[in-house]
Length: 220
Length: 220
Image (cartoon, rainbow over all chains, first blue to last red; front, side, top):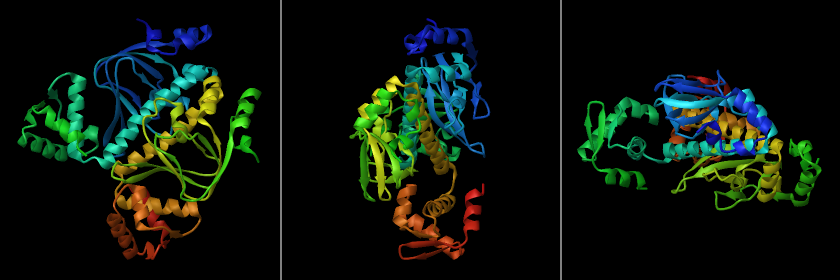
């Protein structure tokens, strides 16, 4: 399947617009850990993800991170082309969390199409609204959910993404995702272990009692 | 000046689209404290603010608030018409913070125009990107800025909006804006008073030393 399949409004574009994309689109294969986009200093372009996993996060002056959202197969990454809208005044870093293959539409090409085509502009609106919704969810988590619930939710989400109960992750990495300190995460995980909800070993967190983690996450 | 002046892409619309708006637009005058839009249960429409001040905030199950952003003269409020985009999956409450006059474009009218018109859709994108930028700024504040800096920034911002150093506000109200507890704000304000940065009296906070509050806010 080619990129037209990954671009839902392909059939609503004119033949000229389709040609413009076909002549300029690039295919890229990147290794896990590659930083694909770096704040507002770059304007990389729109990514159409064929397969793999990207992570979008923000970075403080002091190097602290918070994960904003993840992108998976068939997702579209808009903020790597943030220069196409002048009102985007924030910096997001995009990193491959797994080996990833994707197509890249250069920003000037996408901008031109968006300016001409109401379907393309409305589609872009919907992508932005989805990401906005994820970030609003994150604010609610940060403000109103205690850290035990956030760690439980994170472990359950990872298990669901990776299709395993044996999570290969470090306390440091969980802390980075949640924007907190490693020590705090370690303390929480030890509490979960004492309660027989997880089992900790070097580099691995095994989920033992999914139901209780879920109950913790759901509990108001 | 009529509403066409408040709607920057007016001249890029077709005569039919302009007529559609003219036939359906409503003018409203609302008192300070009026709740104009209530989460996703309503779909009120797009507001063009003639004069006044609106506050957009989110509300937790337990009734806690956080202010997301404010809207002023000539601003456009998009999320009061959130039903026009299916990917908007969050609930925002909009309240008049001052007596406000505005025009309202009904959601189905704006949706129709956005679907037809690339300039309208792109303009909507820019509005959403602006609000997104404000929310991203807020996340950075919450995660990486200590409360003394946030309270200082809030006082300075209020003084700038109200053009006064005598702020008529309560500790409770500041706590609501910042998503924290009144006691915490009171403690912080007393510390500011001990340091001769503000002077507290019933219902009023007077800014005494703007420079030091600024230094606190700027300090990394």
